[in-house]
Length: 89
Length: 96
Image (cartoon, rainbow over all chains, first blue to last red; front, side, top):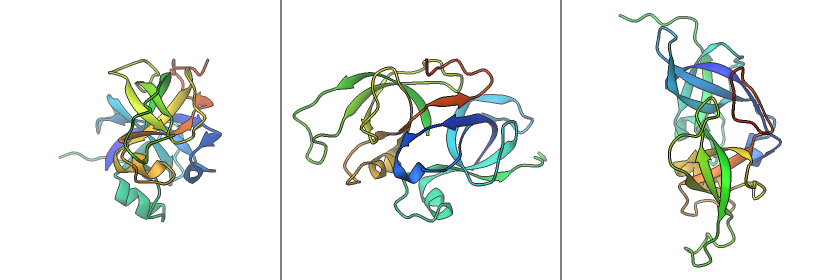
């Protein structure tokens, strides 16, 4: 999984049926201390995340299909948690 | 998924079976701010409605193959959807 910060929402009316009435968020990758990294993902929100929040993103197809309960779902990135704190050794 | 901008179409009449009739679009990958980065790629258009100039989001790998109907034709990138709007403070990538 990866750690990211939600930058905001994407609005889309024309898309694959699987993505109907799902919240789609733009998530930038960050260091544990919050420093932004160049990478990002566009992910389905399954944790009720909003802009500015630090989130846990599951970024692998099989796990994503399991989370979204659809063995044929064309999905890879899913926000599965909202991070309160990251304590690094 | 990642963001891209459709910058053209690719026509290939001689193509691997299963891919006939699948629209192939020329897509410029974008950064999280909407700037162009990296070399353009060819995406199969799962929506069949995206056109040049449009902002799209695409997926790669197995998920790209799952996006097409019938799925599991050999594609490595496919368009998931067309972006109507981006609610992100320092976004510079349109749509115009």
